[in-house]
Image (cartoon, rainbow, N blue to C red; front, side):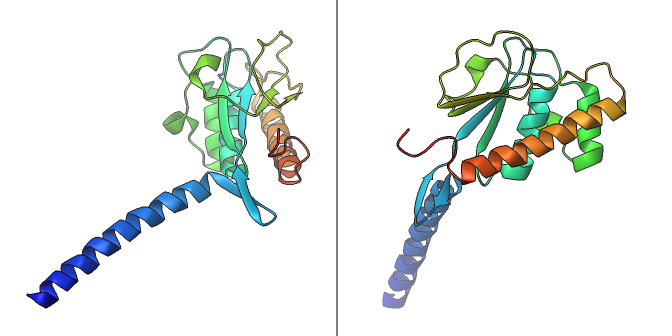
Length: 178
């Protein structure tokens, strides 16, 4: 019986230790290493009017290429019933990403507070969204265009995501004290 009690205590201890480790791992995943310390990963919002095409592509590529550096969100000032189907199809073909599995058209009020706002170049005045850094990518809307034009925009977004990632990693946009 003494061995049984010790064994149950050991199992209970391992169970608690396992949950504690999962909790710590979860915290580390939401943080990124900077020098010898960790800081919260910045939250980035990709914004355009309908949140159906460019901003959705940017959210998907941000998650795919840079989830270890920042958290990606997308939103718009209006919504549409579905994500642009050409964008969905091409992202599946080019990256094997099915945006419809995890994303949908959202309003700005549906995303958390963010550190960085990236507008897509909608030629409209975006509402004031509190943030520490703002940038406009000036991308043309490929809606209704051929696949070659769509692919150019997707490649531009891919490149801009990598540039944004590098700026964040180097601490060029925001710092812990911001």
